[in-house]
Length: 68
Image (cartoon, rainbow, N blue to C red; front, side, top):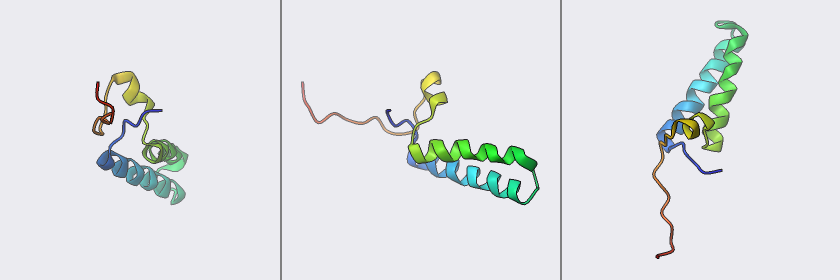
């Protein structure tokens, strides 16, 4: 699995996911807040399947140490 989520994107995903879960626990937005587990998971794993489908990356391309 190649990383496609950068540092800033990662922090935003974890923050928003935690906020959604907190609001759900406080009964502000109801059980839909548990959808916050998805951005937390993609942030921690640094991989977003939707980015792969759309051909997006928010992290720098890894350079190979081998020269051709």
